[in-house]
Image (cartoon, rainbow, N blue to C red; front, side, top):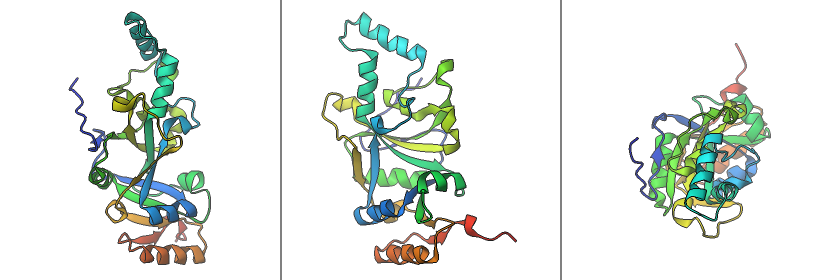
Length: 245
């Protein structure tokens, strides 16, 4: 297996992703305004996710970690290690698809007054590189597995455990940016909720898509607001709003 090269601030891109893959981030009106005002992407600390399988190692890997601690007389348990990984990895989530999804509007837009921010894998990587963060970054295509069947997974580095989710979530077609602080700051104090990372929204955005059920006044408000903030990305209504012929 080739050695993984870690260059702080330069995202590694999963081999199954292409630079022109389209990514969607569905947000309500409040989060959209926050994005425009602050030009930030939010990275949620992993222990704030509700899925109990987040950071779940397979039975084989759990055994290997536990045996390693015993063999080296390290006063640390698997449970402590798993908890600390969840506290030191921060995640920014996207949906990968060429077109928008009715299911994603319902799950993450949560309102007729919502929008989807779209970008591409290459744009996202370039924007994050320009920020020059002192942390390890990776853009991962999530693989959906059955943890209880003990599948073989790649966890080099350990933070890649967050690139795997249980099969129940495969409809999300998720791409994750993993910001890993465990490599150099394992014992450091971490921000409780997450981290907001400044980005150039004009470089990041491919388009802004308005929810299919949005009222006319919200459509107009989004367009005026985007213009006021000097966004160069086109604003359009979801294709799901079009009447069938």
